[in-house]
Image 1 (spheres, rainbow, N blue to C red):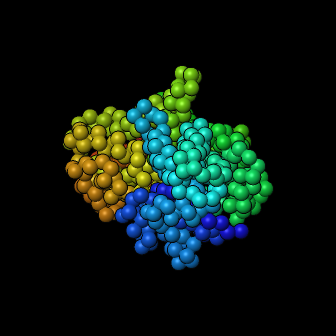
Image 2: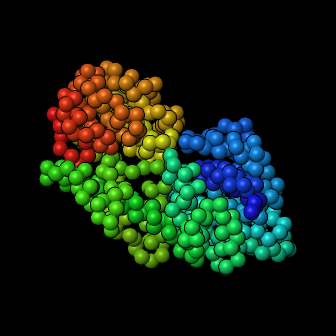
Image 3: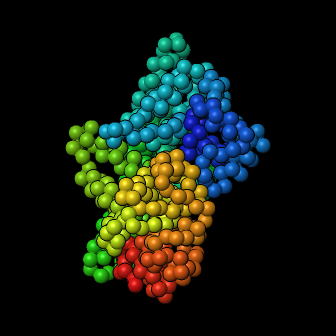
Length: 444
């Protein structure tokens, strides 16, 4: 069954969700206040890098099921489902800034002309659904009208670089409702994804809001735990790869998110960990000690590779450093909270010469950091020309596919600092280089 859906916000979540809902057969209007962004989308230009998204958007536009607009009244009039997918950036105190969510709620209340279901897709603090409902009700009262409005929490679980597959083949669809009718409407909206009756998890609104934060906090915890364990493995002459295999083989633990590395980044984990800590503090709990440690470990891990570099070469200003990878993870151009931002900024401050390459994130990194002294190259191999050492900060598949023997020929100091453990120790030993990684013995 086809439904009319309004998606408020054309950022990462809003654009992917709106395009995929149109692909499922719904009629979707995506609303954004950024006129330049909307104009690009109307022309089929995708403002973010997400594999396959351009094709999905193009299909939606050509089918007539996907449209983009800045007209708040027209967009609101369209949707029986009003999906709020605006940003919730981090405030100075660590809390999520929900002002854009509240603006969207007020606009809904100011313009709807019939009963609607309002869906909070944005990641929001627990209790936001109640605020959204009250704001809409206040606008309706001011207008002297009374329409039935149900507010649902429907958090997203999209991984950057695999968002379309995550949305079209979800592990679960979490829906927080306050009445059974809303649950039935959400089941109808997502019917095309319901290959199993257990796919949709129905909860109350507040539990659904907390699930999103809890899931991201758990994944961040696993990453920081493995990174701290990797440091211990180095001191003990153990190999974190073997430890990971032994741990992940336990069905109670599982193998995912056990990779040691140079720290997590992106738009979700850092912000959501902070927001959950702030939620605990503002509700009289004092804090969340485990998550506070998770954040502390991650902050430290982002400079761990630099510590290794400075132990090997105390005068960093004498080095030309090649850098592979600027995005916080592969298959995205997102550099928010990326380890590259921290490391390259510090290297610039230490007067090192930097030659950096990323397959898709160079422009985003330049706009985010404004580091004028960094040289950006068109290929990974070009970044090695004239360099002394190499730092690997993102595990792009094309990096691990290179012949390691090129490093001895290209790098003057024949030394690599791998923050993502993309090469095997035997391969690097044969390559004739000094190879530092995370949680594993140094080769060479």
